[in-house]
Amino acid sequence: MMAGKKLEIAIPIFHDLTALDAIGPYEVLQLLPNAQIKFVSHKPGLLRACRGSLSLQATASFEEVPNPQVVLVPGGPGSKALMQDQVLLDWLRKVQQFLSSEPTVPVHDTTLFTTSVCTGSHLLAAAGILRGLEATTHWNTYDVLSQYGAKPVAKRVVRQGKILTAAGVSSGIDMALELAALIADETTAKVIQLLIEYDPQPPFDTGSVSKAGPELTARTIEFVKKIVPITDL
Image (cartoon, rainbow, N blue to C red; front, side, top):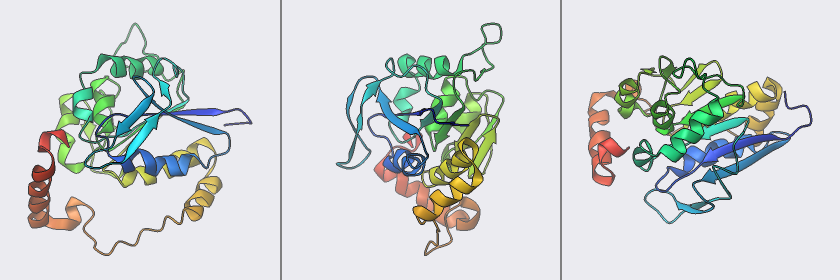
């Protein structure tokens, strides 16, 4: 699919994003042959990740990257404010090439794939890109997708044609490996997985609501309320 030509991958970043949402997929996709990844925002500059001193640098504005072949939208507490940001939402819509006769149906003439991690899917939903489609996000925010006409699904990665959405934070790596297989081929994706030694063996088997159970899930919700309002997750 890439055939010797540069594949431009745009990752929009913002203040109070969840760093791993962007960096996890970046580590996978930057290993693709011919991939050119650009962190973009309203203007070039440093954007602070949530709850810490880590910052990522946007090297281009949205206007400077009008036609990326792949868009990857991370999430984080800062995504809530951007759900009303017409500059970002218009950029997302523009790269989807909406049909003027059917504005709710995206036509992917420009992008090969449109993707998100965690609450990044809220921004795709707010732009109208997920209307009527199955999608996933962080397990505690499925209702936001429903509000924008998407169909939330409790899966780690959901693919609807050229749209891939990933669940919370760490699932972005899974999504990026699936995306790598679609862009290049399965062998390339497997090579990348081995190179980054992505072989999860967590010390606790509580990484999903179904495994954690109601008591731990309730405690997790209370924990999140202490560090960020639950509606901002």
